[in-house]
Amino acid sequence: MSHLQLIWLSSAIALLATGMLTLTAVLGNLLTSHKNQKFQLGRGQTFKYHRFISILGVVLILIHPIPLVFARSTTGVTVASIFVPFLAEKKITIIAVGVIALYVLLVILISSLYMKYLKQQVWRALHYGSYLFFGLGIWHGLSISDNFEPNAEVSLLNPKKILLEVEIMILLMLVVWRVMLYRNQRKSI
Image (tube, rainbow, N blue to C red; front, side, top):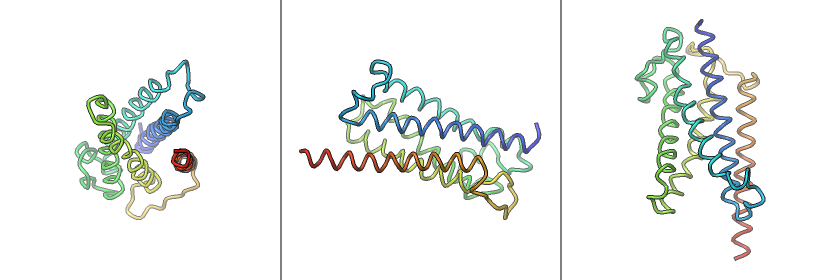
């Protein structure tokens, strides 16, 4: 594969992963609704779908930088720079933000896998890290370009960026819905 094809593959995997994680955010919001019986999928399987899709999304996030390692002479991405912020040879800050987002995501995943052993308040506080993950991940995704040259321009109107922007709109609508739901619940108490 050419370096451009490897960069495209990495972007495609990342977009699929963020799409899946956006879907899990939707399912997670439905799970937190006090009226979630209206939204149950497949006879109460929402939580299982939420968890499965989350794990799959995390796996895809983990593998999305691998094609960039094979295009190292173009991208400057090494195996070490995937896991250690600020080690990339190019796009240092943008890639470091992606690495930090990855670690936030792993904390969320691990805390969710062990949620029965954590106090609900601790788990909830850690799970709210998903907003931090999405913020960092979206900044990373919108800021990086397919061209790894030092001053490469980023167009927010290319198809990959537009898909990410749609995910941003979905997430913002979820946040607004969640805040309105919380306010309505507080008023009814």
